Length: 251
Length: 251
Image 1 (tube, chains in turn blue, purple):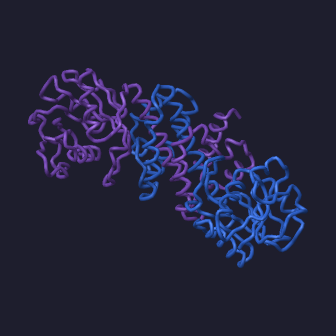
Image 2 (cartoon, rainbow over the protein chains, first blue to last red):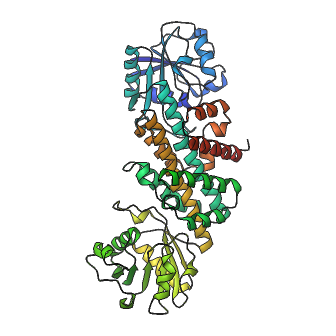
Image 3 (tube, rainbow over the protein chains, first blue to last red):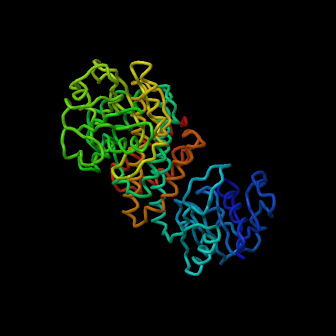
């Protein structure tokens, strides 16, 4: 049994708590949070608002906002234990070196209240010491996740990549939604196209999957589209992404 | 039985031919194409390279590049028959008015060689005359597709929206692929996130589904990301889309 303490009570902390507790080989023995209020979610485990009262565990998982990680790590009242954070962008070295350090970063978007299937979520692992990697790997295995050895620099690259595929793709959907609403067209018509666009990536590289007027260099359609767009920011985005696609295909 | 002639031999023409022939109530009686070579795909149906030899049918489906639609429609050697095009951006009125006009636009991305499931593809329908709408609706029903009555103006809006959700989202994947390659990270790690981002749209509006540093106004992460990006065009895209998201959420 791997004993775990979770530090933090937000979205990710809640998801991790739920999935850890559902396994046979992991046990969350305590959840810490600065304020009591947020701890109400964790009703069947010991909770505390005092770092001094932290109990002994095999892994301390810090799941808080990036800026708060060093503060918590510095204040931990023990040494030589395995302390990991869960951030995509923070370096492992923001953790204080008085403890053994690591990173356990699940690469997924977590929405409050929406259940996630961890067996489909890749976990990026990093540790300062080799034996600790096995512990984190065992945690990932226990929740059914694929895991990858990823350095802090690689993780930074993944994190910015994730902004493109997640935040920015979603913003493309949002813009389409606005255009549809402005023209009394149900946005739902686009849903199969959205799903297929994502689905194609299972069999083709994005480079191979690209279609459309920007790739073809179809100036007439591009101009028609720009004329149809009402908002300046939409025109600007359309123009820049069209240029970028054209460049990708050597136009 | 609805008798159909397909004009064109490209990607979409092939997909339509295959799905029409698989039904019990539709029959492709002829395929026309300007050049013989491209007609080799259609081996179990009468083909022709001469518009003068077109046989009688209930619907003539023009599936060619947008610029070529009026030329073909003008040259048709008959009048008062139902002639439709399949374009997302061309108006119904590019078809010559000597025939009854319509549009049969399947809103999906078609890749050569990749089989498509038409039962998941919405078809945008438009006709000049009301009784013809029923014919096109019957064609859509026969192939198991949902269909929508969509005017030429609405279709233009959908077409530009499709560029955002399909072409531009795919370009976001492409940029992520480049960043991953530049940092020796397997792009596959991002696949579950890509799928989940598209999947979320089934239950949340894109407005509600948005997450990330741009929405939160997390300047530190935004600056970290910009610093991590090597290519100027990637920085430019990151900056513009971050501004657009920030604006959407009133920052």
